[in-house]
Image (cartoon, rainbow, N blue to C red):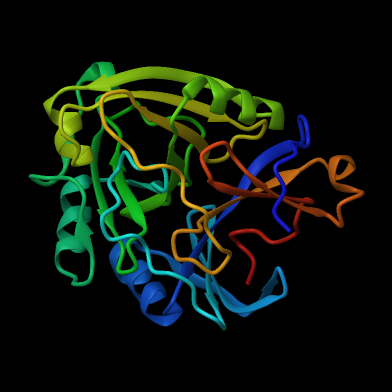
Length: 292
């Protein structure tokens, strides 16, 4: 059952990301070939009495779980833009944008969000190189390359010679920054940075005309991928969608939380944020990106 009550100050870290698909084999092949993930495990998953096949992928220290439900839900909305409230991506850190982009371009099945290829944002927006696109199911993704020496610490693991390094953050579109900040702060995340991004580079990156976007970085207690709130002041966005567990757009963020906050909820609590994004609080797990 999905609830909206908040377990105050429960969150310790962002432990994994969950994507819903109608074809897990195809989607996992894409993540392996396009952005360097490897398979960690496969099994069965049960959620709200609905069964699903599960494949766990890993990149660096980060884990992505892919779910294919026995009863498929709705496809990702075709017309959704980066400013619509269903938008939620995770950003993959790359060691070098040019070969990462070339590798993506060598494959079929994905669609660009950004126009004119990767964009170098101005120093006021972090000076990063970035490119946004959609996987074969429509889930948004971002390739992210930091300027030399300016990658956040500790950041994703950086083994020698690896092109795709890990996941930096998950960004979600919101309608009201203050309201969403209050929601996530109540969970235990803290505001780590704020920026107002605009200009031609941002427009080409997001595929949104004349963007004026408030970016708020929210960090959990432990050094893991963080959450970024994207509030587009100048772009229209559709109202939040009511998603079912098996809908392709029903992406989840899985946060490990203090056990005492969950002891009366069978070790798991599903929440909906003010704009319809799903997150799940779970007790600390023994599963890690190095498990075999």
